[in-house]
Length: 285
View (cartoon, rainbow, N blue to C red):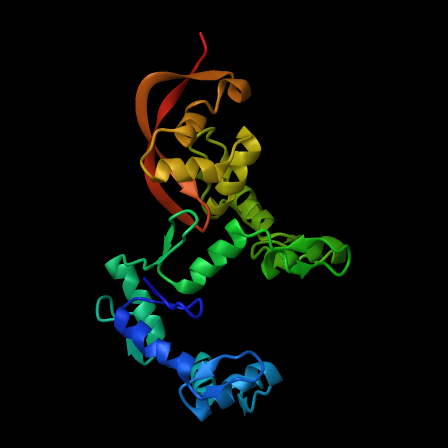
């Protein structure tokens, strides 16, 4: 990745960076934030981010946009139009940028790398979200009922249900309603046999969502999941590996023998990541 020395933007090629650098010497400069643009038109559009002006309105739903291009893209939600096609799998998209991002599914390209844990992402927005949720302690979303702070608006919305008593998740098979989506998934699995459990590879407990493994392991085994992942993902056999090996006599009454088996370390972000080796658990004799 090629980083701009004057701002935080990053680019996949030196050529893109060279084009971007010219922006900083432009005469079209925003008086609000100091950001520069290559033309007066682009500056005019940018100023709307400060003023809140959205002159382009969707005739179907009334949603407003800062540019006509954004309105055109939005209108495809209503029309169903997807004019941009992936040449590998024929999947269609409403925006050309979506095709470019989708192509990384086929190439495996993940150009956006976290400088704190070396995890890579195929979209810059995913990297930003990862840093904000995993590495940052910033909690900009506060509950108006109790003042509790959250890292994401999604977590705040879920929390507010505990105050309002709202149960937005309804079962399609019966009249049951639930506060949390995970409660609905568990209900569908237990009462209607719909869906699939995700077993913890250490204690074999059934869990409703892969992402909840990230919460389950530290809670169940009193360990640092990220520490385990950092070591195992680098192919090491250090502290993280030792935590997995000893997970543990104190909580299960079991110990590990010398037989090796392969298990999948299940990360959050709805991804089953790389395989690691750990020692099999057998009852203490």
